[in-house]
Length: 151
Figure (cartoon, rainbow, N blue to C red):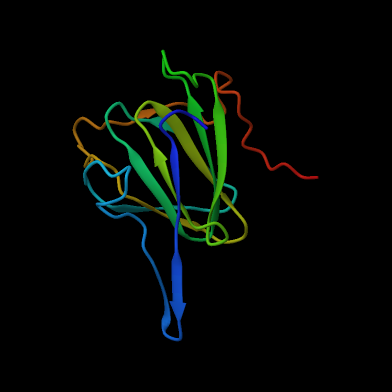
């Protein structure tokens, strides 16, 4: 696992009315602070990524559909520099994924419906100076292939 990346298995509490799923609490061991909450939707087969942040920690939860999330550690001095992690997240695997600053990340919608991501980053988005840096999703500097792996 890439240094600083954490996973929290989410508990779904169903009853006859529906269900409740807690995502993040201020008493979670990884909680730092609140920046904002936003929803991002990725369509099936579409790749959103790569990008990274200098200051921001992301907390990804897919609340509808399924997505593949890939991480790449290119932080100088990191003990996991060069490592890739891949996670399948969403309705079939309800987890919260903590992505630390400096770790490149991207997502691909998998399945037949859009995947809905709720992110609760530690920083709010600053429109005139965003803490977001992009790398082409097909960049050869990242040892990852977004294509589906059949077999």
